[in-house]
Image (tube, rainbow, N blue to C red; front, side, top):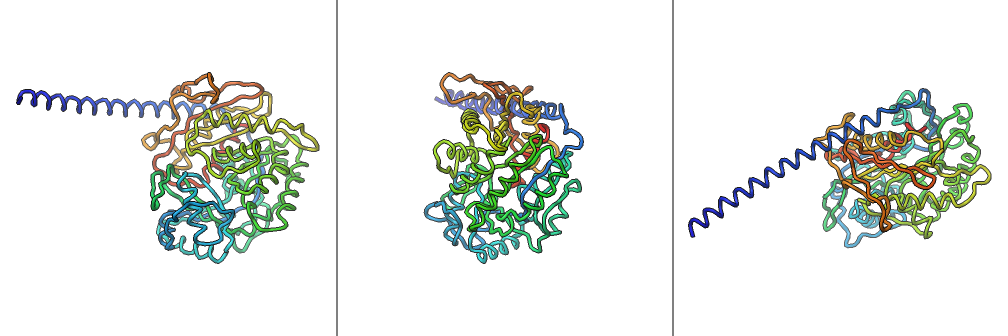
Length: 473
């Protein structure tokens, strides 16, 4: 019996030792794989550069972003987790706020919502600014994208109304057109980490919930000044973003303003391509406005996985999808991209309308770019690689890739569609960007080296979309 116990103990030690050796070897292999993928993405990115004197016009709007730990702010403000997560069109009360936060927090989904009670909003912001870890930064889709475009070497015209203080945070290559505001609109960025808990709710991934009570942005106040400067600036690319500020905004002039935006887009010369940066929209009427006045005049669309699912559902079934899978499969995203592309190509363009020839979907795990064959968009493989690397650089707030602070979420192979019998493409570390042709378009998929030490999530999509665009203009 004693001998048997001794043999069993020795065997247990051997098994544990073997498991440790196996884990160490596996960890080493994963680190080596990340290094090879990182080096390969960097090589792909460097194959092409931004064309000299590339001009990009971008609007509309800007704000001051205030970043805080979302859970800490809620607890400091005395707000407890609700019994039930509920979505509301606008935030009208303390209860609405907790129910909305919980609704998106439990899905790890990004969202941006309007707070109707301005007094409540300002009190909430005042408390946020007093937290020890709160920080502020230049915000808004257009200014954030403008700075990224300038960093990448573009000359930029920005249509935004903001204070002198915020304007001072723009790169010198950014020319601003719009009125000077005495007080900026404020967006409160409530961030949270993967696995973080709030009562009975757990976040499946790091993300943020944004609340605002904007006055200037929903009315597109810089539109007329921006429009007047476009003929002289002669942009190669026009980018429109920030329209989510109009979502559920209570104004009879909203439809009039977005119609005027559509009229401007209609008259943009054909040689200037137009990119529309999507966002989190919850209102069906607003989605209809986009379908009537923005999508028909867009050559390119940029969006995350949630925004893609929302657009896909709206075009297919006429309703809005508020949340989507935080970790979608490549096949699911590609099927949705194909469907959106084909639906937007069904109607023949008339009266200045265009057909979408580029769709860029950025997810936590991968970048997917679809471009029409023979279109003006170029360097799709390099663009996908650059977008992937920019995702890491922004979230980790590092200029260089440190693979000890990265992990791979994307599977080691993926199906190109959910249809039965679809081919699978393996992830090759030394050639991580996979590209292929279908029908009349090309698709490229690049894995993302996901940052494991998150510094910032807000603005990630804007930086990634901008980085993907610059190599394709």
